[in-house]
Length: 612
Image 1 (cartoon, rainbow, N blue to C red):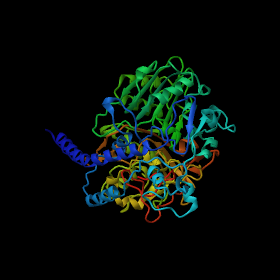
Image 2: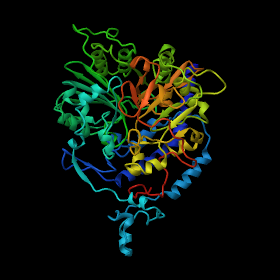
Image 3: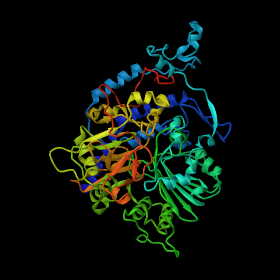
Image 4: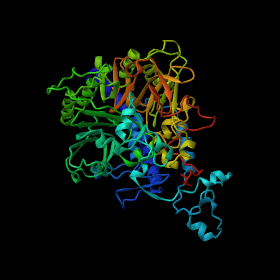
Protein backbone atom coordinates (compact mmCIF):
# COMPACT_ATOMS: atom_id res chain seq x y z
CA UNK A 1 0.00 0.00 0.00
CA UNK A 2 1.57 3.33 -1.08
CA UNK A 3 1.55 6.51 0.98
CA UNK A 4 -1.47 8.00 -0.84
CA UNK A 5 -3.57 4.88 -0.31
CA UNK A 6 -2.59 4.71 3.36
CA UNK A 7 -3.52 8.38 3.80
CA UNK A 8 -6.87 7.84 2.09
CA UNK A 9 -7.58 4.75 4.23
CA UNK A 10 -6.89 6.59 7.49
CA UNK A 11 -8.94 9.57 6.35
CA UNK A 12 -11.88 7.34 5.46
CA UNK A 13 -11.80 5.64 8.88
CA UNK A 14 -11.81 9.07 10.49
CA UNK A 15 -14.79 10.14 8.41
CA UNK A 16 -16.68 6.92 9.21
CA UNK A 17 -16.23 7.40 12.94
CA UNK A 18 -17.53 10.97 12.77
CA UNK A 19 -20.49 9.94 10.63
CA UNK A 20 -21.59 7.22 13.02
CA UNK A 21 -21.85 9.72 15.87
CA UNK A 22 -24.06 11.99 13.76
CA UNK A 23 -26.25 9.34 12.12
CA UNK A 24 -28.48 8.85 15.18
CA UNK A 25 -29.12 12.58 15.44
CA UNK A 26 -29.97 12.82 11.74
CA UNK A 27 -32.56 10.07 12.11
CA UNK A 28 -34.14 11.95 15.01
CA UNK A 29 -34.22 15.07 12.84
CA UNK A 30 -36.01 13.13 10.11
CA UNK A 31 -38.67 11.89 12.53
CA UNK A 32 -39.16 15.41 13.84
CA UNK A 33 -39.68 16.81 10.35
CA UNK A 34 -42.14 14.03 9.54
CA UNK A 35 -44.21 14.83 12.62
CA UNK A 36 -44.17 18.50 11.75
CA UNK A 37 -45.20 17.90 8.15
CA UNK A 38 -47.93 15.50 9.22
CA UNK A 39 -49.51 18.16 11.43
CA UNK A 40 -49.48 20.83 8.75
CA UNK A 41 -52.17 21.72 6.22
CA UNK A 42 -51.97 19.64 3.04
CA UNK A 43 -52.59 20.49 -0.59
CA UNK A 44 -55.72 19.05 -2.15
CA UNK A 45 -55.40 16.69 -5.09
CA UNK A 46 -59.04 17.10 -6.06
CA UNK A 47 -58.43 19.50 -8.93
CA UNK A 48 -55.14 19.57 -10.76
CA UNK A 49 -55.94 23.02 -12.13
CA UNK A 50 -56.38 24.41 -8.63
CA UNK A 51 -53.79 25.17 -6.02
CA UNK A 52 -54.82 25.31 -2.38
CA UNK A 53 -52.94 28.17 -0.84
CA UNK A 54 -52.50 28.95 2.80
CA UNK A 55 -49.89 30.44 5.02
CA UNK A 56 -48.24 27.12 5.76
CA UNK A 57 -48.37 25.57 2.24
CA UNK A 58 -47.20 22.31 3.76
CA UNK A 59 -46.54 20.02 0.83
CA UNK A 60 -43.66 17.75 0.08
CA UNK A 61 -40.95 19.97 1.52
CA UNK A 62 -37.41 20.47 0.36
CA UNK A 63 -36.48 18.94 3.68
CA UNK A 64 -39.75 17.41 4.81
CA UNK A 65 -41.17 13.96 4.20
CA UNK A 66 -41.18 12.44 0.73
CA UNK A 67 -42.63 9.20 -0.53
CA UNK A 68 -39.79 7.20 -2.04
CA UNK A 69 -39.39 3.95 -3.86
CA UNK A 70 -38.80 0.90 -1.66
CA UNK A 71 -35.03 0.97 -2.15
CA UNK A 72 -34.70 4.68 -1.46
CA UNK A 73 -36.97 5.33 1.52
CA UNK A 74 -35.77 8.07 3.81
CA UNK A 75 -36.75 11.58 4.77
CA UNK A 76 -35.65 14.66 2.90
CA UNK A 77 -34.47 16.11 6.17
CA UNK A 78 -31.99 13.33 6.80
CA UNK A 79 -30.77 13.56 3.22
CA UNK A 80 -30.30 17.30 3.44
CA UNK A 81 -28.45 16.74 6.67
CA UNK A 82 -26.12 14.33 4.94
CA UNK A 83 -25.61 16.55 1.93
CA UNK A 84 -25.22 19.84 3.76
CA UNK A 85 -23.36 18.66 6.83
CA UNK A 86 -19.79 17.54 6.33
CA UNK A 87 -19.00 14.06 7.54
CA UNK A 88 -15.34 15.02 7.21
CA UNK A 89 -14.98 16.92 10.47
CA UNK A 90 -11.99 15.56 12.36
CA UNK A 91 -12.71 17.43 15.58
CA UNK A 92 -13.96 15.66 18.71
CA UNK A 93 -14.71 18.73 20.80
CA UNK A 94 -18.08 19.64 22.28
CA UNK A 95 -19.28 16.22 23.44
CA UNK A 96 -20.54 17.61 26.75
CA UNK A 97 -22.34 20.42 24.93
CA UNK A 98 -24.02 17.88 22.66
CA UNK A 99 -25.11 15.82 25.65
CA UNK A 100 -26.43 18.87 27.46
CA UNK A 101 -28.37 20.19 24.49
CA UNK A 102 -29.75 16.76 23.67
CA UNK A 103 -30.96 16.31 27.26
CA UNK A 104 -32.70 19.68 27.20
CA UNK A 105 -34.18 18.90 23.81
CA UNK A 106 -35.73 15.65 25.00
CA UNK A 107 -37.16 17.38 28.04
CA UNK A 108 -38.65 20.19 25.98
CA UNK A 109 -39.92 18.18 23.03
CA UNK A 110 -43.66 17.55 23.17
CA UNK A 111 -45.72 17.20 20.02
CA UNK A 112 -49.44 17.57 20.66
CA UNK A 113 -51.49 15.22 18.47
CA UNK A 114 -54.94 16.61 19.33
CA UNK A 115 -56.81 18.40 16.54
CA UNK A 116 -56.74 22.19 17.02
CA UNK A 117 -59.82 23.98 18.31
CA UNK A 118 -61.20 26.21 15.57
CA UNK A 119 -61.19 29.16 17.96
CA UNK A 120 -57.52 28.63 18.79
CA UNK A 121 -56.12 30.62 21.71
CA UNK A 122 -59.33 32.73 21.86
CA UNK A 123 -61.50 29.78 22.86
CA UNK A 124 -63.50 30.68 26.01
CA UNK A 125 -64.89 27.21 26.74
CA UNK A 126 -63.86 25.56 30.02
CA UNK A 127 -65.56 22.18 29.57
CA UNK A 128 -62.92 19.57 30.56
CA UNK A 129 -64.04 17.20 27.80
CA UNK A 130 -63.62 19.93 25.20
CA UNK A 131 -60.18 20.84 26.53
CA UNK A 132 -59.17 17.18 26.50
CA UNK A 133 -60.38 16.61 22.94
CA UNK A 134 -59.01 19.74 21.22
CA UNK A 135 -55.63 21.45 21.23
CA UNK A 136 -55.55 25.09 22.43
CA UNK A 137 -52.35 27.03 21.69
CA UNK A 138 -51.34 29.11 24.67
CA UNK A 139 -53.36 26.89 27.05
CA UNK A 140 -51.96 23.39 26.52
CA UNK A 141 -48.43 22.57 27.75
CA UNK A 142 -47.22 26.13 27.16
CA UNK A 143 -47.46 29.44 28.92
CA UNK A 144 -50.08 31.81 27.49
CA UNK A 145 -48.59 34.69 25.53
CA UNK A 146 -49.22 38.14 26.93
CA UNK A 147 -49.87 40.30 23.90
CA UNK A 148 -53.14 40.28 22.00
CA UNK A 149 -51.15 40.63 18.78
CA UNK A 150 -49.35 37.37 19.50
CA UNK A 151 -52.66 35.60 20.09
CA UNK A 152 -53.94 36.74 16.73
CA UNK A 153 -51.08 34.90 15.08
CA UNK A 154 -52.37 31.58 16.36
CA UNK A 155 -55.44 31.46 14.11
CA UNK A 156 -54.48 29.67 10.89
CA UNK A 157 -56.18 31.20 7.86
CA UNK A 158 -58.91 29.15 6.20
CA UNK A 159 -58.03 27.06 3.19
CA UNK A 160 -58.60 28.86 -0.06
CA UNK A 161 -58.68 27.42 -3.53
CA UNK A 162 -57.08 29.62 -6.13
CA UNK A 163 -56.39 29.05 -9.75
CA UNK A 164 -52.73 29.24 -10.72
CA UNK A 165 -53.66 32.21 -12.88
CA UNK A 166 -54.61 34.14 -9.73
CA UNK A 167 -50.91 34.55 -9.05
CA UNK A 168 -50.27 36.24 -12.33
CA UNK A 169 -50.55 39.89 -11.45
CA UNK A 170 -52.46 42.01 -13.89
CA UNK A 171 -49.67 44.53 -13.51
CA UNK A 172 -47.02 42.13 -14.79
CA UNK A 173 -46.07 41.48 -18.38
CA UNK A 174 -45.55 37.93 -19.65
CA UNK A 175 -42.37 36.29 -18.48
CA UNK A 176 -40.53 36.73 -21.78
CA UNK A 177 -40.91 40.50 -21.45
CA UNK A 178 -39.90 40.47 -17.79
CA UNK A 179 -36.90 38.31 -18.60
CA UNK A 180 -35.76 40.71 -21.30
CA UNK A 181 -36.19 43.62 -18.88
CA UNK A 182 -34.06 41.82 -16.26
CA UNK A 183 -30.90 42.18 -18.37
CA UNK A 184 -27.98 42.26 -17.84
CA UNK A 185 -28.30 40.19 -14.64
CA UNK A 186 -31.19 37.83 -15.50
CA UNK A 187 -31.47 37.14 -11.76
CA UNK A 188 -34.83 36.16 -10.25
CA UNK A 189 -36.37 34.97 -7.01
CA UNK A 190 -39.54 32.88 -6.79
CA UNK A 191 -43.00 34.04 -5.80
CA UNK A 192 -43.78 32.94 -2.24
CA UNK A 193 -47.49 32.21 -2.51
CA UNK A 194 -48.41 33.04 1.07
CA UNK A 195 -46.39 36.28 0.98
CA UNK A 196 -48.57 38.34 -1.34
CA UNK A 197 -46.09 41.18 -1.71
CA UNK A 198 -43.79 38.89 -3.68
CA UNK A 199 -46.46 38.35 -6.35
CA UNK A 200 -46.04 41.89 -7.66
CA UNK A 201 -42.24 41.79 -7.86
CA UNK A 202 -41.30 41.76 -11.57
CA UNK A 203 -38.07 39.93 -10.71
CA UNK A 204 -39.88 36.82 -9.47
CA UNK A 205 -41.05 33.72 -11.29
CA UNK A 206 -42.91 30.43 -10.92
CA UNK A 207 -41.98 27.07 -12.42
CA UNK A 208 -44.41 27.30 -15.39
CA UNK A 209 -42.74 30.58 -16.45
CA UNK A 210 -39.64 28.63 -17.44
CA UNK A 211 -41.71 26.34 -19.69
CA UNK A 212 -43.61 29.19 -21.37
CA UNK A 213 -43.71 29.09 -25.15
CA UNK A 214 -43.10 32.84 -25.08
CA UNK A 215 -39.46 31.95 -24.33
CA UNK A 216 -39.20 29.67 -27.34
CA UNK A 217 -40.33 26.34 -28.79
CA UNK A 218 -38.79 23.67 -26.54
CA UNK A 219 -37.48 20.62 -28.39
CA UNK A 220 -36.09 18.76 -25.36
CA UNK A 221 -34.80 19.55 -21.88
CA UNK A 222 -32.39 18.45 -19.16
CA UNK A 223 -33.05 18.71 -15.42
CA UNK A 224 -30.29 18.15 -12.85
CA UNK A 225 -31.49 18.12 -9.25
CA UNK A 226 -31.14 16.61 -5.82
CA UNK A 227 -34.83 15.81 -5.31
CA UNK A 228 -37.61 15.44 -7.82
CA UNK A 229 -41.36 14.85 -7.51
CA UNK A 230 -42.34 13.65 -10.97
CA UNK A 231 -46.02 14.46 -10.54
CA UNK A 232 -45.16 18.08 -9.74
CA UNK A 233 -42.73 18.48 -12.64
CA UNK A 234 -44.64 16.65 -15.36
CA UNK A 235 -47.92 18.35 -14.46
CA UNK A 236 -46.46 21.64 -15.61
CA UNK A 237 -44.76 20.12 -18.64
CA UNK A 238 -48.20 18.83 -19.67
CA UNK A 239 -49.88 22.19 -19.09
CA UNK A 240 -47.21 23.86 -21.22
CA UNK A 241 -48.02 21.50 -24.10
CA UNK A 242 -44.69 19.69 -23.73
CA UNK A 243 -46.05 16.24 -22.99
CA UNK A 244 -44.05 13.78 -25.05
CA UNK A 245 -41.10 16.11 -25.59
CA UNK A 246 -37.90 14.33 -24.43
CA UNK A 247 -36.90 15.11 -20.83
CA UNK A 248 -33.81 13.77 -19.04
CA UNK A 249 -33.74 14.09 -15.24
CA UNK A 250 -30.52 13.38 -13.33
CA UNK A 251 -31.38 13.12 -9.64
CA UNK A 252 -30.38 12.06 -6.15
CA UNK A 253 -33.86 11.23 -4.78
CA UNK A 254 -37.01 10.59 -6.80
CA UNK A 255 -40.72 10.30 -6.09
CA UNK A 256 -42.92 8.77 -8.76
CA UNK A 257 -42.53 6.27 -11.58
CA UNK A 258 -40.80 7.48 -14.77
CA UNK A 259 -42.65 4.81 -16.76
CA UNK A 260 -45.89 6.71 -16.10
CA UNK A 261 -44.74 9.50 -18.42
CA UNK A 262 -44.03 9.55 -22.13
CA UNK A 263 -40.47 10.24 -23.32
CA UNK A 264 -39.15 10.78 -19.78
CA UNK A 265 -35.76 9.38 -18.81
CA UNK A 266 -34.60 9.47 -15.18
CA UNK A 267 -31.12 8.48 -14.02
CA UNK A 268 -29.88 8.38 -10.45
CA UNK A 269 -26.46 10.02 -10.16
CA UNK A 270 -23.77 7.72 -8.85
CA UNK A 271 -21.72 9.40 -6.11
CA UNK A 272 -18.16 8.05 -6.06
CA UNK A 273 -17.30 9.57 -2.65
CA UNK A 274 -19.01 8.34 0.51
CA UNK A 275 -21.41 10.82 2.14
CA UNK A 276 -21.40 13.02 -0.94
CA UNK A 277 -24.58 13.98 -2.77
CA UNK A 278 -25.88 15.27 -6.08
CA UNK A 279 -26.88 18.72 -4.85
CA UNK A 280 -26.83 20.53 -8.21
CA UNK A 281 -29.91 22.40 -9.48
CA UNK A 282 -29.68 23.20 -13.19
CA UNK A 283 -31.88 23.15 -16.29
CA UNK A 284 -30.94 23.22 -19.96
CA UNK A 285 -33.66 23.90 -22.54
CA UNK A 286 -33.01 23.17 -26.20
CA UNK A 287 -35.20 25.30 -28.48
CA UNK A 288 -35.67 25.35 -32.22
CA UNK A 289 -33.88 28.73 -32.09
CA UNK A 290 -31.11 28.08 -29.57
CA UNK A 291 -30.28 26.89 -26.05
CA UNK A 292 -30.90 28.28 -22.56
CA UNK A 293 -29.31 27.45 -19.18
CA UNK A 294 -31.02 27.97 -15.82
CA UNK A 295 -28.96 27.65 -12.63
CA UNK A 296 -30.96 27.82 -9.41
CA UNK A 297 -31.40 26.57 -5.83
CA UNK A 298 -34.82 24.83 -5.79
CA UNK A 299 -35.41 21.11 -5.68
CA UNK A 300 -38.08 19.95 -8.12
CA UNK A 301 -40.69 19.61 -5.37
CA UNK A 302 -43.71 21.80 -4.64
CA UNK A 303 -42.76 23.42 -1.37
CA UNK A 304 -39.38 24.57 -2.66
CA UNK A 305 -41.12 26.57 -5.39
CA UNK A 306 -44.26 27.66 -3.52
CA UNK A 307 -42.98 28.95 -0.20
CA UNK A 308 -39.21 29.00 0.33
CA UNK A 309 -37.03 31.83 -1.00
CA UNK A 310 -35.06 30.54 -4.00
CA UNK A 311 -32.72 32.13 -6.54
CA UNK A 312 -32.57 31.65 -10.33
CA UNK A 313 -30.21 32.76 -13.07
CA UNK A 314 -32.13 32.42 -16.33
CA UNK A 315 -29.79 32.89 -19.27
CA UNK A 316 -30.74 34.47 -22.56
CA UNK A 317 -31.12 32.12 -25.52
CA UNK A 318 -27.75 31.33 -27.05
CA UNK A 319 -28.03 30.86 -30.85
CA UNK A 320 -26.48 28.03 -32.87
CA UNK A 321 -22.97 28.52 -34.27
CA UNK A 322 -24.29 28.08 -37.78
CA UNK A 323 -23.40 25.79 -40.66
CA UNK A 324 -23.71 22.80 -38.36
CA UNK A 325 -20.54 23.70 -36.49
CA UNK A 326 -19.71 22.12 -33.14
CA UNK A 327 -16.73 23.47 -31.28
CA UNK A 328 -15.57 23.93 -27.72
CA UNK A 329 -13.59 27.05 -28.57
CA UNK A 330 -15.88 28.81 -31.04
CA UNK A 331 -18.70 30.77 -29.49
CA UNK A 332 -16.90 31.09 -26.17
CA UNK A 333 -17.45 34.06 -23.85
CA UNK A 334 -14.84 36.08 -21.91
CA UNK A 335 -16.11 34.23 -18.80
CA UNK A 336 -15.27 30.80 -20.30
CA UNK A 337 -18.82 29.69 -19.46
CA UNK A 338 -19.19 27.31 -22.41
CA UNK A 339 -16.03 25.36 -21.69
CA UNK A 340 -16.85 25.22 -17.97
CA UNK A 341 -20.35 23.87 -18.69
CA UNK A 342 -19.05 21.22 -21.10
CA UNK A 343 -16.39 20.13 -18.61
CA UNK A 344 -18.98 19.89 -15.86
CA UNK A 345 -21.34 17.72 -17.92
CA UNK A 346 -18.49 15.45 -18.98
CA UNK A 347 -17.32 15.08 -15.36
CA UNK A 348 -20.36 12.87 -14.65
CA UNK A 349 -18.99 10.27 -17.08
CA UNK A 350 -22.52 9.43 -18.14
CA UNK A 351 -23.23 8.96 -21.85
CA UNK A 352 -26.56 10.82 -21.70
CA UNK A 353 -24.78 13.92 -20.34
CA UNK A 354 -21.94 13.44 -22.81
CA UNK A 355 -24.58 13.86 -25.50
CA UNK A 356 -25.75 17.11 -23.89
CA UNK A 357 -22.13 18.30 -23.73
CA UNK A 358 -21.90 17.79 -27.49
CA UNK A 359 -25.16 19.68 -27.97
CA UNK A 360 -23.78 22.64 -25.99
CA UNK A 361 -20.70 22.73 -28.26
CA UNK A 362 -22.95 23.62 -31.19
CA UNK A 363 -24.09 26.97 -29.73
CA UNK A 364 -22.71 30.46 -29.42
CA UNK A 365 -22.23 31.46 -25.77
CA UNK A 366 -20.19 34.57 -26.55
CA UNK A 367 -22.81 36.85 -24.93
CA UNK A 368 -22.76 34.97 -21.60
CA UNK A 369 -21.63 37.37 -18.84
CA UNK A 370 -21.40 35.08 -15.77
CA UNK A 371 -18.83 32.49 -14.71
CA UNK A 372 -19.74 28.90 -13.87
CA UNK A 373 -18.46 27.77 -10.45
CA UNK A 374 -19.04 24.04 -9.96
CA UNK A 375 -17.95 21.18 -7.72
CA UNK A 376 -17.51 17.52 -8.68
CA UNK A 377 -16.55 14.68 -6.30
CA UNK A 378 -12.93 13.58 -6.25
CA UNK A 379 -9.35 14.25 -5.26
CA UNK A 380 -8.28 17.07 -7.57
CA UNK A 381 -4.62 17.89 -8.11
CA UNK A 382 -2.48 20.02 -10.43
CA UNK A 383 -4.33 22.33 -12.76
CA UNK A 384 -7.55 20.36 -12.22
CA UNK A 385 -7.62 21.59 -8.63
CA UNK A 386 -8.39 25.10 -9.93
CA UNK A 387 -11.33 23.93 -12.07
CA UNK A 388 -13.65 23.10 -9.18
CA UNK A 389 -14.97 24.22 -5.82
CA UNK A 390 -13.63 27.14 -3.85
CA UNK A 391 -10.32 27.03 -5.74
CA UNK A 392 -12.17 27.84 -8.97
CA UNK A 393 -13.88 30.72 -7.15
CA UNK A 394 -10.51 31.85 -5.76
CA UNK A 395 -8.92 32.09 -9.19
CA UNK A 396 -11.96 33.80 -10.74
CA UNK A 397 -12.35 36.44 -8.03
CA UNK A 398 -8.63 37.11 -7.80
CA UNK A 399 -8.39 37.59 -11.56
CA UNK A 400 -11.52 39.63 -12.18
CA UNK A 401 -12.94 41.23 -9.00
CA UNK A 402 -12.02 44.58 -7.53
CA UNK A 403 -10.48 45.18 -4.12
CA UNK A 404 -11.69 46.62 -0.84
CA UNK A 405 -10.50 47.24 2.70
CA UNK A 406 -9.50 44.14 4.62
CA UNK A 407 -11.88 45.11 7.42
CA UNK A 408 -14.94 44.50 5.24
CA UNK A 409 -16.34 40.97 5.67
CA UNK A 410 -17.34 38.26 3.28
CA UNK A 411 -21.12 37.73 3.54
CA UNK A 412 -22.16 34.10 3.25
CA UNK A 413 -25.90 33.38 3.16
CA UNK A 414 -26.93 29.73 3.36
CA UNK A 415 -29.59 27.20 4.34
CA UNK A 416 -27.29 24.75 6.12
CA UNK A 417 -23.85 24.50 7.67
CA UNK A 418 -21.52 21.52 7.85
CA UNK A 419 -18.87 20.55 10.37
CA UNK A 420 -16.22 23.22 9.99
CA UNK A 421 -13.76 22.49 12.80
CA UNK A 422 -12.84 23.80 16.23
CA UNK A 423 -12.72 27.46 15.14
CA UNK A 424 -13.05 29.74 12.12
CA UNK A 425 -9.36 29.34 11.32
CA UNK A 426 -9.80 25.61 10.79
CA UNK A 427 -11.49 26.11 7.40
CA UNK A 428 -14.17 28.83 7.26
CA UNK A 429 -11.93 31.90 7.14
CA UNK A 430 -8.58 30.28 6.41
CA UNK A 431 -9.71 28.36 3.34
CA UNK A 432 -13.16 29.30 2.03
CA UNK A 433 -12.71 32.85 3.29
CA UNK A 434 -9.38 33.32 1.53
CA UNK A 435 -10.92 31.99 -1.70
CA UNK A 436 -13.77 34.50 -1.51
CA UNK A 437 -11.43 37.36 -0.58
CA UNK A 438 -8.26 36.62 -2.57
CA UNK A 439 -7.19 40.28 -2.50
CA UNK A 440 -6.92 39.98 1.28
CA UNK A 441 -3.44 40.96 2.37
CA UNK A 442 -1.55 38.22 4.19
CA UNK A 443 -1.43 39.34 7.79
CA UNK A 444 -1.76 37.64 11.14
CA UNK A 445 -5.55 37.93 10.86
CA UNK A 446 -7.89 36.30 8.35
CA UNK A 447 -10.91 37.59 6.45
CA UNK A 448 -13.94 38.39 8.58
CA UNK A 449 -16.99 36.27 7.77
CA UNK A 450 -20.65 37.20 8.32
CA UNK A 451 -23.15 34.35 7.99
CA UNK A 452 -26.79 35.10 7.16
CA UNK A 453 -28.86 32.24 8.55
CA UNK A 454 -32.37 32.36 10.12
CA UNK A 455 -32.75 32.43 13.87
CA UNK A 456 -35.18 30.20 15.74
CA UNK A 457 -37.53 33.15 16.25
CA UNK A 458 -37.51 34.03 12.56
CA UNK A 459 -38.57 30.49 11.68
CA UNK A 460 -41.24 30.46 14.42
CA UNK A 461 -42.85 33.62 13.01
CA UNK A 462 -42.34 32.73 9.33
CA UNK A 463 -45.15 32.24 6.82
CA UNK A 464 -45.02 28.49 7.51
CA UNK A 465 -44.25 28.61 11.21
CA UNK A 466 -41.90 25.87 12.34
CA UNK A 467 -42.42 24.08 9.02
CA UNK A 468 -40.46 26.96 7.47
CA UNK A 469 -37.39 25.44 9.10
CA UNK A 470 -37.81 22.17 7.23
CA UNK A 471 -35.29 23.33 4.61
CA UNK A 472 -32.74 24.45 7.22
CA UNK A 473 -31.13 21.18 8.37
CA UNK A 474 -28.41 22.72 10.55
CA UNK A 475 -27.90 19.96 13.10
CA UNK A 476 -27.85 20.48 16.86
CA UNK A 477 -24.89 18.12 17.29
CA UNK A 478 -22.91 19.98 14.65
CA UNK A 479 -23.70 23.36 16.19
CA UNK A 480 -22.72 22.22 19.68
CA UNK A 481 -19.22 21.41 18.42
CA UNK A 482 -18.75 24.81 16.82
CA UNK A 483 -20.55 27.36 18.96
CA UNK A 484 -17.79 29.80 18.04
CA UNK A 485 -20.07 30.46 15.05
CA UNK A 486 -22.40 32.56 17.23
CA UNK A 487 -20.20 35.60 16.65
CA UNK A 488 -20.67 35.19 12.88
CA UNK A 489 -24.46 34.78 12.70
CA UNK A 490 -26.73 37.44 11.17
CA UNK A 491 -30.50 37.49 10.77
CA UNK A 492 -32.41 36.68 7.61
CA UNK A 493 -33.97 40.05 6.82
CA UNK A 494 -35.50 40.79 3.43
CA UNK A 495 -37.70 43.81 4.00
CA UNK A 496 -36.43 45.35 0.78
CA UNK A 497 -37.85 42.41 -1.20
CA UNK A 498 -40.82 41.90 1.19
CA UNK A 499 -39.86 38.31 1.94
CA UNK A 500 -38.52 38.21 5.48
CA UNK A 501 -41.29 35.68 6.28
CA UNK A 502 -40.26 33.35 3.44
CA UNK A 503 -37.44 31.21 4.77
CA UNK A 504 -34.35 30.97 2.53
CA UNK A 505 -33.28 27.88 0.66
CA UNK A 506 -31.25 30.19 -1.57
CA UNK A 507 -27.44 30.28 -1.12
CA UNK A 508 -25.40 33.37 -1.97
CA UNK A 509 -21.91 34.75 -1.35
CA UNK A 510 -20.71 38.32 -1.71
CA UNK A 511 -18.30 40.94 -0.40
CA UNK A 512 -19.17 44.61 0.13
CA UNK A 513 -17.09 47.20 -1.69
CA UNK A 514 -18.00 50.04 0.66
CA UNK A 515 -18.39 50.38 4.46
CA UNK A 516 -22.10 51.17 4.11
CA UNK A 517 -22.67 48.01 2.02
CA UNK A 518 -24.24 50.06 -0.76
CA UNK A 519 -22.13 48.24 -3.32
CA UNK A 520 -20.49 44.82 -3.68
CA UNK A 521 -17.44 43.47 -5.51
CA UNK A 522 -19.18 40.32 -6.75
CA UNK A 523 -22.22 38.15 -6.15
CA UNK A 524 -22.50 34.37 -6.35
CA UNK A 525 -25.68 32.27 -6.57
CA UNK A 526 -25.07 28.58 -5.97
CA UNK A 527 -26.42 25.29 -4.67
CA UNK A 528 -23.43 25.05 -2.32
CA UNK A 529 -23.99 25.57 1.40
CA UNK A 530 -21.20 26.34 3.85
CA UNK A 531 -19.57 22.93 4.01
CA UNK A 532 -16.36 21.18 3.08
CA UNK A 533 -18.34 18.57 1.17
CA UNK A 534 -19.71 21.27 -1.14
CA UNK A 535 -16.70 23.56 -1.58
CA UNK A 536 -13.83 21.16 -0.99
CA UNK A 537 -10.99 20.91 1.49
CA UNK A 538 -7.30 21.40 0.72
CA UNK A 539 -5.05 18.49 1.61
CA UNK A 540 -1.40 17.42 1.25
CA UNK A 541 0.07 20.85 1.96
CA UNK A 542 -2.49 22.54 -0.30
CA UNK A 543 -1.65 20.44 -3.35
CA UNK A 544 -4.94 18.51 -3.43
CA UNK A 545 -8.59 19.56 -3.21
CA UNK A 546 -10.98 16.93 -1.85
CA UNK A 547 -14.67 17.38 -2.79
CA UNK A 548 -17.54 15.05 -1.93
CA UNK A 549 -20.58 16.51 -3.73
CA UNK A 550 -21.86 17.83 -7.03
CA UNK A 551 -22.72 21.55 -6.86
CA UNK A 552 -23.16 24.32 -9.39
CA UNK A 553 -23.46 28.10 -9.26
CA UNK A 554 -22.85 31.30 -11.20
CA UNK A 555 -20.52 34.16 -10.30
CA UNK A 556 -21.64 37.70 -11.21
CA UNK A 557 -18.66 40.01 -11.74
CA UNK A 558 -19.08 43.75 -12.51
CA UNK A 559 -16.22 43.60 -15.00
CA UNK A 560 -18.19 41.33 -17.33
CA UNK A 561 -21.73 42.52 -16.65
CA UNK A 562 -21.63 46.33 -16.41
CA UNK A 563 -17.97 47.09 -17.25
CA UNK A 564 -17.43 48.55 -13.78
CA UNK A 565 -15.57 47.48 -10.63
CA UNK A 566 -18.60 47.06 -8.34
CA UNK A 567 -22.36 46.53 -8.31
CA UNK A 568 -24.68 49.01 -6.66
CA UNK A 569 -27.06 47.20 -4.27
CA UNK A 570 -30.78 47.83 -4.67
CA UNK A 571 -34.07 46.08 -3.87
CA UNK A 572 -36.08 47.10 -6.93
CA UNK A 573 -35.26 46.81 -10.59
CA UNK A 574 -32.88 49.61 -11.55
CA UNK A 575 -30.54 49.90 -14.51
CA UNK A 576 -27.16 48.25 -13.92
CA UNK A 577 -27.98 47.68 -10.23
CA UNK A 578 -28.03 44.27 -8.56
CA UNK A 579 -31.40 43.58 -6.94
CA UNK A 580 -30.35 41.86 -3.73
CA UNK A 581 -32.37 38.99 -2.15
CA UNK A 582 -31.83 40.19 1.45
CA UNK A 583 -31.14 43.43 3.27
CA UNK A 584 -27.64 44.87 3.37
CA UNK A 585 -25.86 45.30 5.67
CA UNK A 586 -26.98 42.19 7.54
CA UNK A 587 -28.09 42.52 11.18
CA UNK A 588 -26.13 40.63 13.83
CA UNK A 589 -28.04 38.24 16.09
CA UNK A 590 -29.25 40.02 19.25
CA UNK A 591 -27.76 38.74 22.48
CA UNK A 592 -29.16 35.36 23.46
CA UNK A 593 -30.47 34.55 19.98
CA UNK A 594 -30.02 30.99 18.78
CA UNK A 595 -29.85 29.82 15.16
CA UNK A 596 -32.56 27.53 13.89
CA UNK A 597 -31.52 23.97 14.71
CA UNK A 598 -33.11 20.69 13.70
CA UNK A 599 -33.85 18.23 16.48
CA UNK A 600 -34.52 20.77 19.23
CA UNK A 601 -37.77 20.79 21.23
CA UNK A 602 -39.71 24.07 21.45
CA UNK A 603 -42.48 24.90 23.92
CA UNK A 604 -43.32 28.27 22.43
CA UNK A 605 -46.00 27.86 19.75
CA UNK A 606 -45.37 29.07 16.23
CA UNK A 607 -47.82 31.32 14.40
CA UNK A 608 -50.17 28.35 13.95
CA UNK A 609 -50.02 27.18 17.55
CA UNK A 610 -47.73 24.25 16.86
CA UNK A 611 -45.10 23.21 19.42
CA UNK A 612 -42.31 20.69 19.07
